[in-house]
Image 1 (cartoon, rainbow, N blue to C red):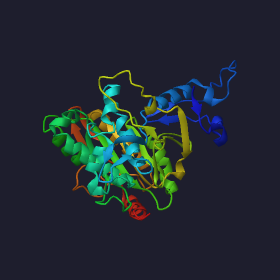
Image 2: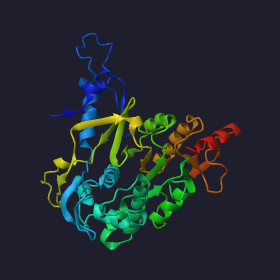
Image 3: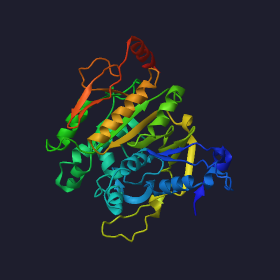
Length: 377
């Protein structure tokens, strides 16, 4: 049975707005033209049922207890401190197309699993990751960058070289100064060249965009832009939640954000590649939780996944359109090269075998003035 948490109390039963879940639209409005329709509750619609099924199919990764010890203090659980790590594992798990058991094994709770909490803590030492300590989205994004780049050349983690490249979109070295991060296309191309060891023009790539969108709460001007990113086919959702309590936000409807919650404590599960009969129900959730989007902590990160060059071009075009709708306050901007003029006010083309793509917005002096204003939150 499906358990839908909180819909009656928050009025979601009356909303006929579309639900966006990681780039997929679910229409929950009933057919008003059907005079014989006896159902007016959107949660009874086929669209809503399809949304719930999709939500329940997403991989959930939560606190675990009973895993092999981590660190000098021999932590065997991540209860009360590992929620950001677990949220990030969920985000990365979504685009992988290995077999189901192989994906779960990648995120198992031991050093033998490449994307385990053990290996993430080791990779993120330089950014403050340590057993028992909570970290923010920026440090988590950089940790994934280190982990994927360091493991792809190791013989014991050879399978990682076939998964995806990674790029963190960030405008400042410390990632915490506000303003819009800059996605540089030349950097992406160089990243892919290095990832493929010069053997491919393109590989799948994970884009992580850490942001600080306010002080105590998200500046309201950013909320429509955040919501719009869930309509991108490349969307992987948000790492966000309330301060010190990270969740994985996967969808939106109106002003509500749907999320997977890592805070439930579960016993460690030893995922073996040859055991296809293992009970994996703890890696899924049939409780659809939501929170107001404006209650999300302003320090967050957005994830995107581009499978191929055409997918990346589409992502850039959609981002350009979002920038044009931002009234001078975009979430992030695009530039072709680091030597380009002001990011967000550059017009350029990226060449490929199919021709050229225009996706750099043209700005004017008024746009530039607006940009200077929103740099300071």
